[in-house]
Length: 80
Image (cartoon, rainbow, N blue to C red; front, side):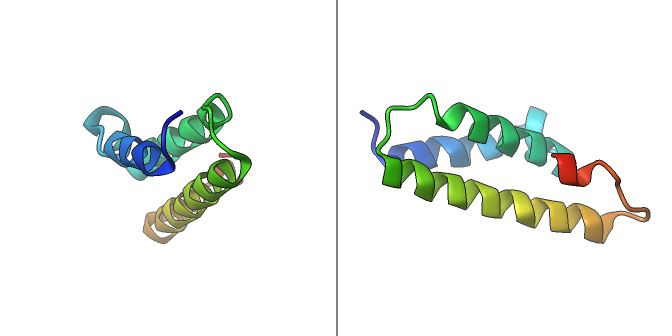
């Protein structure tokens, strides 16, 4: 079983993947994919919840960055 800190390191490295996280939308899609894959990992309920909360908070930060940097509102941003 992977330790939560190992998983967090893997997630952090994924966030620096230049092909997917070069833009805020790339980061948002990457976070969404990671959250979806989280349930497949062998983690305790508490560890999974902690990591998911962390990732959801990161998603919210990226969405705020998109809203702040965008000239026009994105009507689909809430769906991501």
